Image 1 (cartoon, one colour):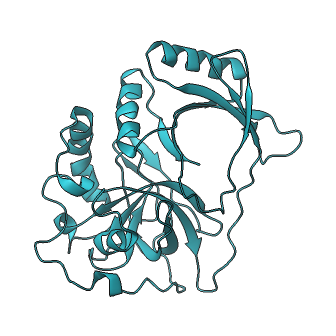
Image 2 (image 1 turned 135 degrees about the vertical axis):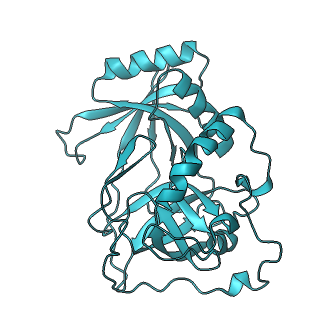
Length: 292
């Protein structure tokens, strides 16, 4: 997938920036479903985790569109929330980063840094459907996307029509090892107003019936830097914007806080994409959608 994305990324960035994405399902150009997809997609079995050697290709550090990526040594303990997308007929039968042909009707996925191959459970946080897929490709490299699912996986999760879904991705293995639980701490909101509000983050292991999306535009160890960025972006009409603080460095009692500047909650992934483009215009190139 890496090679195909190298050619496709400039087009994707241009289309996203210009707002010319008009095809249903969120796919670009001539990608999407085939004219007559199999009628039994729902009956395609999930991938079954098994011990496999790492693929000969796709596991070394690489760079796409000026961004460097270093694949993880292993997937143990991996769990992350974010935005899932899917890819279909345009790449069906073409070589993936692991060297295998892409099969849009197999339960597979592409990820930027998980080992190839590895297995993950993907849960749609908006309808609680879940599938297990085998990660055998690299991508997606469009901003704000965490994982790129095969057509079959996206169909079973119910995100074909929207093109994207809010998901939790969790590594699984042959013996279903327990994954690391992400610690949660009280989070302090530092709004533009003088008053402050205390909130708590939802535990990462709890399904979110109504997951909230935010655009994170910066993270700092110095509160003044976070407040300065918040104030600058608020003057540019990027709001509601706030600073959220939480312990860093593992969350110990003596851990220095991290101050995250976030916009939201967002109404949709598309709003997050539009705000990301605006942030890029203002010189912020590492903005990303986060899910709570």
